[in-house]
Structure formats: C-alpha cells, structure tokens
Amino acid sequence: MRALVYRGINDLRVETVPVPPIQSGEILVRVAVCGVCPTDIKKIQHGTVAPPRIFGHETSGTIVRLGARVQKFRVGDRVGLHHHVPCLKCHVCRHGAFAQCETYKRTGITAGFEPAGGGYAEYVRVMPFVFPGIVKIPQRNTFAEGAMLEPVNTVLKAVKRLNILRGDHVLVAGQGPIGLIFTRLLALRGIKVIASDLMERRLRLAKELGAAHALDAADPAFEEKIRRITGKNLLDAAIIAVPSDAAVLAAERMLRGGGQTLLFAHTRRGAKLPIDLSSICADEKDLVGSYSSDFTLQREVSRLVFSRQLDVAKLITHEFSLENGAEAIALASNPTPASLKVIVNQALAGSQPSAENL
Ligand SMILES: [Zn+2]
Ligand SMILES: [Zn+2]
Image (cartoon, rainbow, N blue to C red):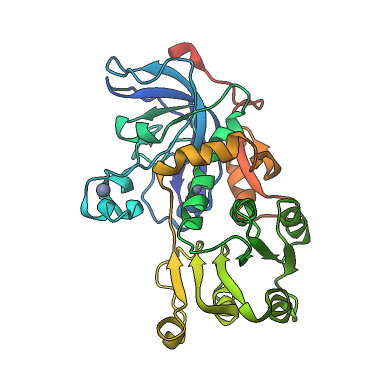
C-alpha cells in the first residue's frame, strides 16, 4: 500500500509499505479521509518523536477485514476512528483526567512502524482497546464528517471545562478551524461569542457560524470594544485557540472576577508568562487548560456533526490526494487567508487503493 512516511524533520515521503497484518482481536480499515492536525505538524517540524512513523489521527474509512474474535463490527461498516481511549480504572481516570492516563497515551491505530495514527496511509490496523471510540457513520453523512469527529471532540471536551451560562460573553481568540468549532458550539449553547482573528475571511465565517461579534485582534481599540460589548460584567470566559501569549494577558485583563481563561493552543513546553497571582487568588480568575479528547463524549459529538448543527463541511477548504499528502501538511502549517481545515481524501486521483493483496 502507499503511505506518507515521516523520515525525519520536515521529511515526508510517499512510500510503498506492507498492509499491516491484523491479529484476531483487531480490524483493518481502508482509510477514506484523514484530517491534518496541528499536533502532527509540530511533531514533523520539530522532530519531537523518532522516525520512521506514519502520522494522521483524524481518520475515517471502511472496515475491510475483521480478526476472528471481533464481533462488534462488520466488513463494509463506514466508521470514524478514535486513536486514544483511557482505561477508565486508574487513579487519574477516576478523577476524569483521561488525557493523563497511561493507557490513553498509547496510540491504538497504526499503518506500520511505531503506532502514530496511520491515517496518511491506505490501510490502518485498529487495536481493540480503542474500539470504544469508534463511531459508525450514517448513510447520509460523508467520510469527511466522520474524520472531523476527533477535532470536534477535543473542542467539546474543552467547552465542558467552562462554567458558563446562556447569555454569557465568551471571547474565542483565534478563528482557525478549532476556534471556529468553539464559536459554533458555544453559539449553539446560547453564548454570546466574541470571535477575534487577524484574517477578515475567518471573522466573516465566525459570524456565519453564530458569533455575536467578530473583532480584528490587531485593532488598537480591541479591548475597548470588548468592554463596550460586555459592559461592566466584562468577559465570563476567554478561550485562547491560538498560541499567543499576548492574547492570554489581554484575556486576563478583560475577564470578570470568577471568570475563566482556557488555554487550548499552548502546547509548547517551557513557555512562561508573568501573571499577577492575586488575580487568581483574590479575583478568583481561573486559568485552565484542555488537551486532546474524551471518548465518552462521542455520542454527543456525533449528534452535533451528523445532524449538521455543526456543519464541518464549511470548515474544509482544501483536499489533497495521499500522493500529495506532504503538500496538505505544508498548507496546514502555513495557512493562507483562503485556507482552513485541510484534509487528505483518498477518493481523489493519484491515490486509488491498491487492494490486490487483500
Ligand atoms: Zn488532532
Ligand atoms: Zn486510566
């Protein structure tokens, strides 16, 4: 089969590799669509993990082979995959901190080499411990929608960390694909979203998805405008969906006492920021984070995506074949005003499945 193999920093090559053999408890999925995710891009650009690997974890496709002991699925099922599932039994799981669980940190989907998601390949092998996260895609829905369940899940998980009420004012800083999903999910909950970004096209889309206000983050009057919108109550919460330290400090200034700032994009180790600790102690402003997904939310995520209350098709601007997968990653890491979510779609020419060996 063909696969996009990570061979070193910024070195991705389309290679022919074996279709991964499955064990009796596993399934083999022919990949249809895999979304390009910033966390994979960071690993590719900074070499934080050892090559070779096949990345890609926002994956959907069709089950083409079942291990002898698998009863839960059928050949031909169209599915959205989920590569991380917690054990639910360990100390951190009992506290609901699934993303910190050792089992959760294992990747249960691979196209070969050290498991890394494998979605940038024609076939992936899926291990049984991640079966609880698999969702069947309804007939009327697309593989692209199935592939978007994972990023939407990460956003819904973060939204649930917020203590917010209908009618509240919440700033969503950064209107890339993730920020736009935040905007939509919050708008659906009756939150007055103030969306900010530097790109006008993204601000327009934020309005379309239900933002009450859309502000240019570079506007010198940015904070003044937020104060005018929110009145004396200020912001109830701020979501920082862009790795900008200035955005965190601005949010802290515009947050009411008892409000929350949620970090979603600050994943780089070693980053430091001076914060007035009395704003946390005396003003009771929370600084919280959220990372990765929670498979127990899959039913709610599926309902939002498959009903198109959250229409993910609006976010997908570019599709590439597997053969051109490196271009997909290059575009997603250097977004243009015209680009949002980038996906690898194997239905496109140049990447037809080579199924003779199945
Ligand atoms: Zn992702
Ligand atoms: Zn656990």
